[in-house]
Length: 304
Ligand SMILES: [Zn+2]
Image (cartoon, rainbow, N blue to C red; front, side):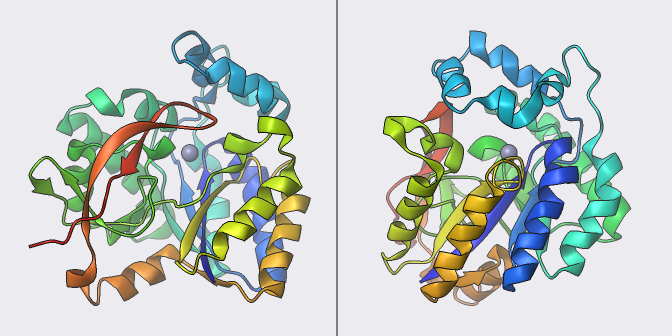
């Protein structure tokens, strides 16, 4: 059983509190993971206004008790309080991530803007989001990031074309079943996509009485399929109120000989034989427990 841990860091709180907690948990178990950081303004407060615009959002906020999890400050950033720059705090945390042997990549610049507006952004706007995120990364690390994970799994032909020209090794923008080259109409992106294959904690927590340990039992059961899996966790959740349950889950994985991998290492391995990687269409669809739509992998196709 092989499992890639993809850690999304969306907010300033997630970076300054969640990431250090996760680094401790992973170090204690000798596990290496892939972290993806949003490096622009923390506008999470704007997400509150999705209540009025997106079906399912209010229900999810109440079910997941988001205010208790994220805290009212985070929810007001970008609305009543000015949005703090996540990169201001990242200069201390980001080098710690890579020094511990983890991979660090980009999770967009303005997480909320990418989520809300990507589907209608033109190429210049997408380029600007990637450019600003990469500039902040280079500032701190001295070298560019080679991986990108789209905020809230939003990918378009425009974003994939921009990423393909941004010297990325791979991206992790979608929900799906296996690595592929994304196809939009007749255009196939030359940039490898490694999708998230498992549900996330915030999607299932509270659904039909699903408690946090039930959730992780379900994830563990899904690993038995034999195919490598990618699990997305959030610094704000698994590095916040759910750290103990997440640590128990990792211990159960290790007891069952689950091998953990970094997504970048898997990408290198896969790209040794690109002819074996299928293409697949990408479509927008709904997921249980998630407001709005996300980008999904369609059925894999053999490339000619
Ligand atoms: Zn995110």
